[in-house]
Length: 110
Ligand code: AMP
Image 1 (cartoon, protein in one colour):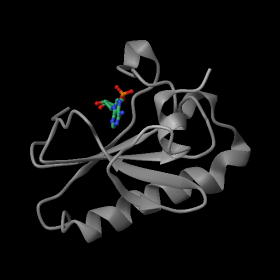
Image 2: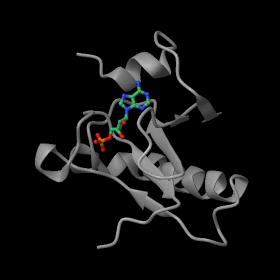
Image 3: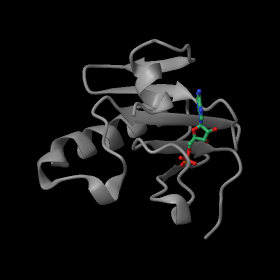
Image 4: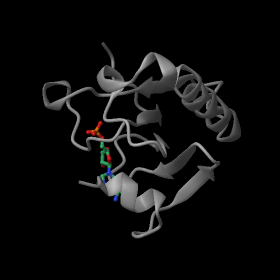
């Protein structure tokens, strides 16, 4: 079954798109947990890092570099930022389509 992110990628539901290319889309989180909260989502419907394959290496690298690019674009470098991904229900994942959270403004401390 398609996740809500597949519907966003296919423009079946609207979102606040910050970046898009052939491999991914970046949108504002609908329920932001910090001042800046962007989701970087691959167009390929990988569930999470656990289900990714060795052959996804380039895609995973691309997603992180897009996080970096957006952090620069939104001037997050000086104050710092976080890139987080949740894995599985027990890991806090609610949408079963891989995504990286790009967060800045009130860091989650570990
Ligand atoms: P996670 O809990 O790691 O799976 O994160 C899922 C994130 O997706 C949450 O931060 C939600 O607020 C966000 N989210 C859910 N539906 C939408 C939507 N339609 N547009 C933007 N963000 C969404």
